[in-house]
Image (cartoon, rainbow, N blue to C red; front, side):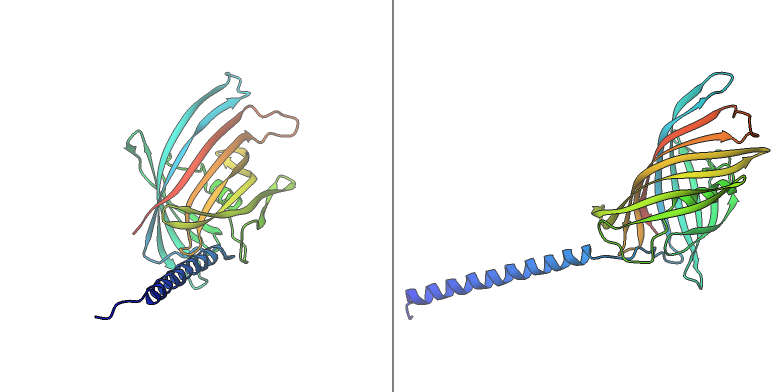
Length: 280
């Protein structure tokens, strides 16, 4: 057996070190590439699949009070848990999604009759063509169809037709006709950063804005005026909303003839947490 010389031993050691360095650099390069890809500007678009159901869980906690009522002020706290299942009925020729959403209220362990809503949604998030197939007064999120449509139009984000990156922003404005005036309800959105939620890499978007929603309840003409701020976590690769947290204050008053004061103001303040739970 030929002895191994000290020179050969040092050469082998150097070779091992070089291989380890090359391997380490390769791993770092792959990690940096993956990180760069995750951080590059992206266009936010929903990517729903026909026949699939997307289950969400929504928790609403807050308080309500009545101000200016002749019988004295009233108020209280409340909490609600909703489950929401979006079934994708079809993908239309214009690439919009036909959605049937079933919303169920669970309060103190008791389930109520669900509200079923059908609507169209564009890949950029714009919702339109809303119709209620079935509703229960206990689970209705909105008092009327008119109120539902205006509220969603003013508060739900319509993503821009451009790529977005950290620090980008956009403004969403809705024109509201009120008596002889036209009022603009405005929402401002800002892209904050990439954040991981569960197993999803999401782009976090913070927003703030206000809403102006005229609607009717029986013969009464009512007006909702509110402010909201919150955060949205959207996963561009999957094309899904993963989580949304909203803090909202809404004051509802009756629209009175000129010169007459409104009899009372109904004020609701709540926090709404909305999370993706399951895809079937």
